Length: 307
Length: 330
Image (tube, rainbow over all chains, first blue to last red; front, side, top):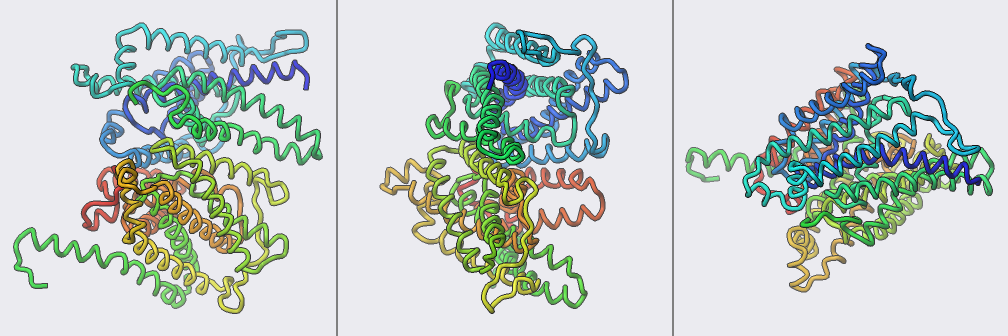
């Protein structure tokens, strides 16, 4: 395989990693701070995509679509937390799994009822259309570069927010010792709602941004949900840094590994068979990696202190 | 019963009796259902009920590790796939001897459960959920890449497993009663296991593993044994499902199916004998009922599910009045 293809795959991996990080950051905070297993996180991602696609279809403006999808996802997250999920904090993890599973299937059918089964159109904005030649022989879509850039901006912003602000400090404290934070007089209810809303906004952003690259359709959240759980488990629950490292690792392993497996299979097998097997076999890579990490480090790579 | 009718007391006595009778009553209803189906000519009812029995059997097997053993496996549907593909693959190669097919289904399930269990049981809680999910996803994608055996589309099975001259699985009532018999056997087996010394160690390990080890029990071996028993029974369910619809595909081992099983155990009442049966009947029955009303039945199903979980922490079994539950619910 040529170096140029490998570079393009590495960029694809980076782009996937950034999307996965947007999802996993919120999920790991909600789990780490609120001790809530939230299967409806993929729903917030899906709804972000639908909000953006709908605004785009009505107004024709990509930027307006992005600008409204994120606050709408935030509001949906806050509403979910206040109305329903708040009542599950004292319950077992198994009950939380069931309640958020209910939310997930509810929204999946709601989306089918309101928007139908067909995938929704969300086009690339004029500014980010076309491709750019990064190196001789390496052409890459500008939009995907934009996704990578956005991911880096969010990583930096989230880092500054968590490390340098008072709210960020409370979030870090909450991730390592919830009860102590609440005993010190912090309004933990409000903190929980804000953290959940933040996670929802990030998931909504990911769903909106992914629209032009893949499709906005019912069930788009299911696969994303599983991948983000893999990331937070590999990274260590409650650790944003762990989520970033795991997202980068998984994104690169998935895309580069896929290309390598495809190349290897095409060497040995007839083309039709190789193309048929590649996607499935490549999908096992992530799970092999997660299982290996958990066998060696039962609490992930970067376990949050105090857990 | 000679109880003086003290207000309040009477209620609890009555509820206790309902609890004792509810499980056997449900089984009795299943036993006479084919008669009703034959009289009314409702073949569909019989096939729905058979599906309930198979899923109930799988839920009973999951309950042993999830409810009594405190091991929340989120990859139990993988064993459906193993059992189903054992039947499908052997059948494709012209082997339709049921004893051989089912024997392979059980043996492979046992070996796979031993491997997964040995690697997973050091993880706890949510990490256990995720590592079992990982192994199940692995098998799911392997089935998808099983190129000669239908790949992603799955494969149809030419004929039912042949169980000698004893039982003809193509005959719906016979198939139905085989499923019922297996379910009853699994319930009796679970009851005996849970009451045995083995079961006590298992439940002890679920509530406080470190203490059990300190007393001197090598709990890992006990938990692994329970995991293998559970996986093996689920593998048998896979062989039954394959015979039910004469079709196997990777989708029968997707994580959504594992989630369905999980829901049946939790909704029915984890760590109770009949809970998984109630859960399977309730969820599949609700699905059938709501689907006749609307294509978007989950819009109604989800609120009921959420209300059940929030309203009754001990599941349907808890609604019927039994106090306490297994140690699996913390």
